[in-house]
Amino acid sequence: MSFRIPGLSRGPSRKGKTPPPEETFEEAAYLKALGEKQKPVTIKLLDGEVVKGWIEYYDRNMVRVTRDNAPNLFIFKHQIMYIAEDLGRRKP
Image (cartoon, rainbow, N blue to C red; front, side, top):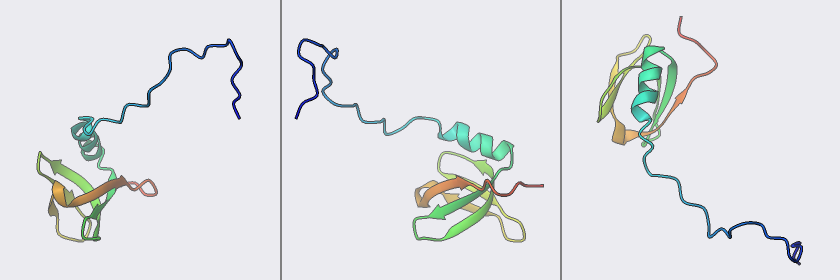
C-alpha cells in the first residue's frame, strides 16, 4: 500500500545513505581531552580484561593508564576494544 499523493514530488530520489567513514581523525583530540582533564576511564581489552584509571599519555600505538593503588600500564591500542569515560566519579 502506497501513501504517495499523485503529482506531489518528494524531491530527488535517494539511492541510499553513504556509509560512515572508517576514520574520523578525532581520536587524538579525544584522548588529549581525557588526559588533560584527568577523566577517569574504563578500558576494555580484547581479551575481556577491564582496566580503570586515567590516561596520562598516548601516542600513535599505545596509551599509558595511571591507576590508583596499582601499577601504571602501557597498553597497545590494537589490544583495546573500547575506552569509556567513568561519569559516576570524578578524580579529586
